Image 1: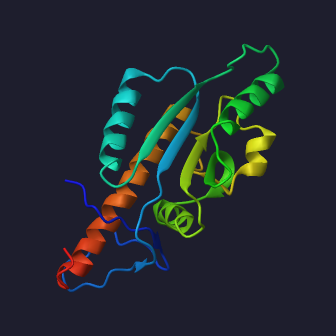
Image 2: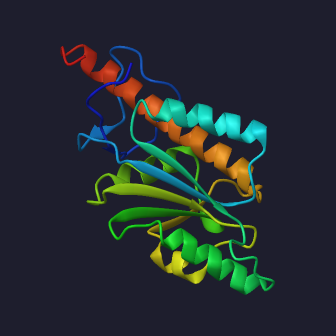
Length: 197
């Protein structure tokens, strides 16, 4: 069952590890009434069957909270022999999918090292920027091009270890689902005593 009113949040404190029990204070301050549509853009080879099953499962769950698109761009779309040309081609293909009012999160091994709490803040803060969509970008085997690096609103990394791009995608969708699930659970608990749910 999908809830018809969605909420984006700015988090001043960290998430609790689980939704609070009744009577426990929620650590969120509610600021708006909709989650941003989300787009996940990945560059790479065809995903393995197991990875695709996991991604599809999490995206299906995420769609209870917001609109989600999973877009795959083939690595080296023009079969370039030079690595720099390949990165430029992938960069252009990715940039063609991004609108001027997207809030762009670039996943990069040199990005900000964040945990689950900070990931929640990234998602929440995007909802307060006036952006119409949240776009996560996972680059190809040689990373992101210069256009994406200049366009990205924030660059993050999901681990201090270098992750295979397919594993990074699974971690990303799991974290997005975990964030939405905890937030909605917290809001339901917080407001259930006030007759709002």
